[in-house]
Image 1 (spheres, one colour):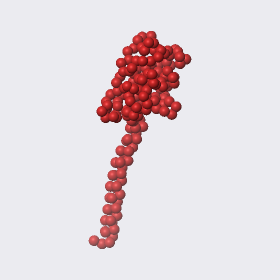
Image 2 (cartoon, rainbow, N blue to C red):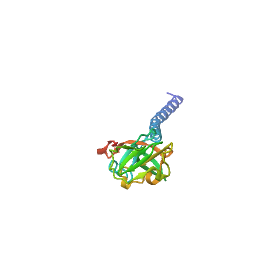
Image 3 (cartoon, rainbow, N blue to C red):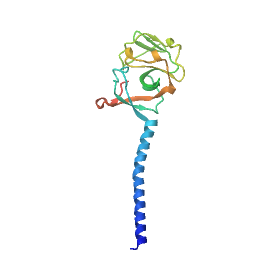
Image 4 (cartoon, one colour):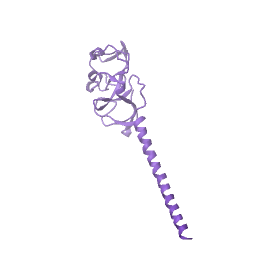
Length: 183
């Protein structure tokens, strides 16, 4: 084998090593991009901070937030932005509805609605205390499950749909509680 053939062989081996290296790295780059895209647009973990959702959700638990799910129903658990914090609460009132609590009972549009998932102790409240008679379009009335210790719509007002990051119905951690959130 002459020197030119030897150099061509070395050059080809170097090119093959580079191609293999790029192929190997590109797999990791695709995995990282996939994770970033999933966390940005589809699901991401969120941590419960505080006691406002006791007894269903405890401080420190990790939930899976569905960012794509904006079709909210009564009693869905949502995460929303409030003053640079992420709060976790339960949807109680939907756009176009009236909300009243009287003697620890929830009334939507004047009709009693059973709440099975919470300790029902709460003070009397009417939506008019927030300066509205009905919940406007694209707004929600939310409350924590621990009604006696929750900074929720009774205090902070209605939550805009634009501030809602998504909904959650799955506990990821601790593993002994992994599964659906009580509704």
